[in-house]
Length: 136
Image (cartoon, rainbow, N blue to C red; front, top):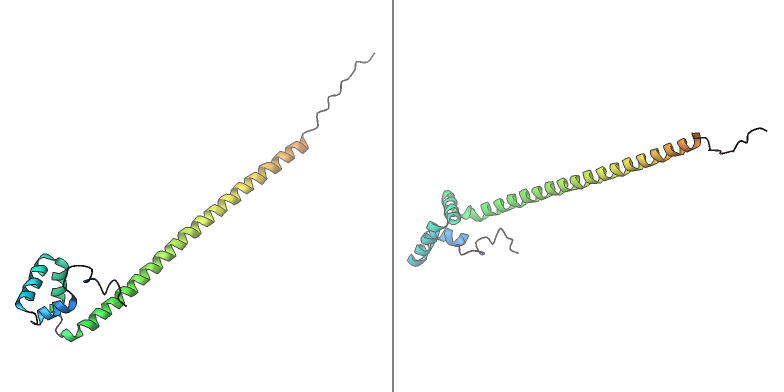
């Protein structure tokens, strides 16, 4: 199964890893060598890849090194995704706590003012409008 990282050269017109190795080891025809050189001169990605491949003394170690790099990148990417997921969870949790606090605050004031109004009504004497007749 190919991953996006392993097929990076296949999605472009860039020569593949094996072709660059063959170029370094002189296994290409003159025409193929010229094609690789022309491409590398105009492609900074391939130029960097070729420079990195030239730095490796034992070319047989390249697949192992590439696999180690892919594993490290995969690990780093997974770690980054987990951190982002945790951050997103904390944001949602914080928003939920704020919403709950606001609901509790509104409920508190609603109950408080409701009870205050009841107390005021209980302490206010009922208005008795008795008409007092003058004594005769």
